[in-house]
Length: 193
Image (cartoon, rainbow, N blue to C red; front, top):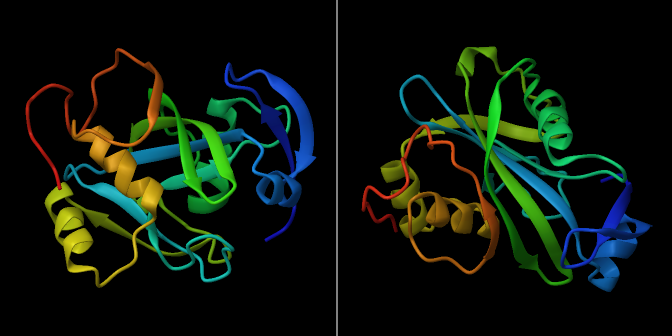
């Protein structure tokens, strides 16, 4: 993976410095990330399999899009960039669901935001350097895959799915947004996993 300049942020999400990604991860500096859940017309999540070239969780199932924010970039801008770079999708309307703090792994502390939108999977033209493949999965299918252990799934994706379905999860919610979720409306009592 190529190195890129990232904003280092404090607990209030205020930029305190800028460092290269390799330095941020080596020193465990808090930085920013973004994820997107894309819901299909069949009410499934479009899921990506990360490229074998990724330095973190290669070949694991992941959100529709997962990105670091580049230095000076906003959350929505990074989500839109990720839609274009990873999936070749332009013009998708997305809305924020939650802003949170999470420990993604050793030395990987992030303040992130999760967005959601609708997509026709036929529009996806993924970049094979970024994404190994895509699939559309129901929450029940994802749960079965998780419990089978046959396919690796990114730990952050598992936690975001747990939050999405109303299950307690190890992440600090900074802010939730009032929009209804497309696939799983908040508060309907369903438990997943």
